Amino acid sequence: MKIAISGKGGVGKTTIAALLAQSWVAAGFKVLAIDADPVSSLASALGFPNPDKIVPLSRMNELVEERTGAKPGSFGQMFNLNPHVDDLPDKIAVEHNGIKLIVMGGVKTGGGGCACPESTLIKALVRHIILDRNERIIMDMEAGVEHLGRSTTDAVDCLTTVVEPGMRSIQAARRIKDLANQIGIKRVCAIGNKVASPQDATFITENIDNIKVIGIIPYSNSLKETSNTQEKDERVNKEIDKINLALIPDHQSAKTQR
Ligand SMILES: Nc1ncnc2c1ncn2[C@@H]1O[C@H](COP(=O)(O)OP(=O)(O)O)[C@@H](O)[C@H]1O
Ligand SMILES: [Mg+2]
Image (cartoon, rainbow, N blue to C red; front, side):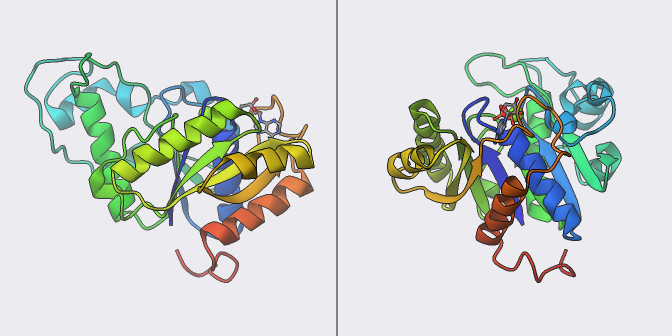
């Protein structure tokens, strides 16, 4: 099961990625979480101690050079476009409370969309994880489909866009759906978040067009402003269970399945 989460900044992508990862571990699954947002915050949402000390892949200079043949940040230089990455998940993942996490980090672009060594390495690693790893994968992304390429589209079970009651996040979700469709991802769904009233819920379902809404997470003081999702809110948990069943119909009975 491989789920990628996208959406406008601040809508709750990281919070929901952490909640899903925690629910999967609680249900007995092996979980590998990927923080693919250049502004990384999944480690702190998952309660990792000293999240700021985790070095993202894009800043592992020696490793980037070893695998690609070029230093991070170098442009216009020859480098290996097909770096060896199979050993990296076990080598660079950090673990806390049963969840493995890989932080990809930000990449300076050279302008004109040209690829740099670290973005090539990140893309190769995402591809490998999505195609070849058999844990449950949750990928926290920025507001786009960056790092996902055509080769991974069949293996991504669902691109989930998070929306809040507000037109800008809905427009972002529509744009993300278009981008996803362009690279061949067919299954796109939406999760409503920070919903404080029945009117909020209706606003989302009425404006989201033909994106299927698989859950509506209430506005919750236990999630607000905290970077840690350990504190529980029963209403949120219930909704996460519902989302799991929509994403993965056999979620409850699949404890032996990895
Ligand atoms: N359901 C919710 N109720 C209240 N606050 C929330 C909820 N979901 C997320 N938040 C808060 O909103 C802010 C942005 O959430 P975050 O997950 O970091 O968004 P994103 O990853 O999309 O940028 C955080 O301060 C978080 O604690
Ligand atoms: Mg985030």
